[in-house]
Length: 331
Image 1 (cartoon, helix red, strand yellow):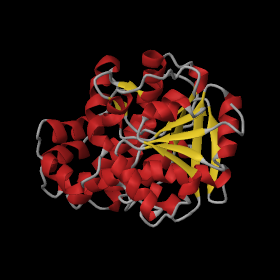
Image 2 (image 1 turned 90 degrees about the vertical axis):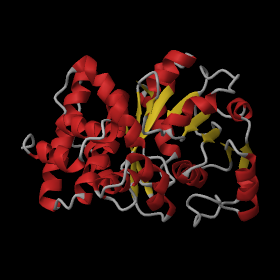
Image 3 (image 1 turned 30 degrees about the horizontal axis):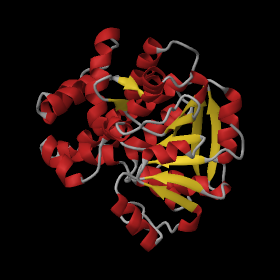
Image 4 (image 1 turned 180 degrees about the vertical axis):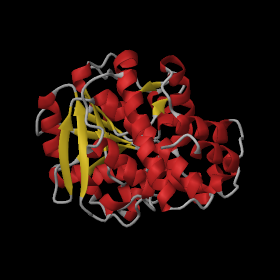
């Protein structure tokens, strides 16, 4: 991989659109896969994504669109996956091209369903991609602020320091700062779990808990993330770095956070199903809650906030009662 390696983006949502905007800042052209040809046709006609980040204009002459995932993989050296985790296997279903000689970047903040695996482990085990050829893209970085070119920070986590540095250079712009890390497992799990705790803050907001309680909730949430990451992948990490704590904070507090919005609706009395329908967007934390709860059956980490969110979302526990019980367990 080098500064001329061809970049391919997989996904048609807001995060994929933001990533494409960043990539095109330092790159002459990119490949971009979207599953629906009609979305591509409309994108080309309007010079913007018809459904997401509609304020961002693109020079579509610099984008090689395709609805054929094999064509994208064949013509790309670096492949950035930016689809919701529940749909990852659906996109890969038609893949016949090999991935083991590509540099795979996961911008997915979720667990692969059924396997209960983080995305890097899934690509290594299911597609034979070497660990040094897999990276994870972490925030704090909301797509909406990238669209507005508000200063944002990305962490590129990869076992290969050299490859993560090369990729970081490609993604450093006037509005994006980058840093690198070798804690790909910890950063992936943290990126998944912050969505769960964002739902928790939303539920409490919907129940009219104030800022004082929210601060205690987030303080306990980062401790839960730290305990879990240390159990799954024990190594020296500073949980206060922006890839962990910063990403949690922006997801828990931002008006752009779909997980917080989902939690707020549940806290206000919406059923899970109704909240999902009303949002018309994927709240990754809903799926992550079940996956992390099941993974934790192996590790038995003390995670009272996770347990409370799980009871509310999957066992139809009363948000009022469950959060009231949770308040007795926080410090």
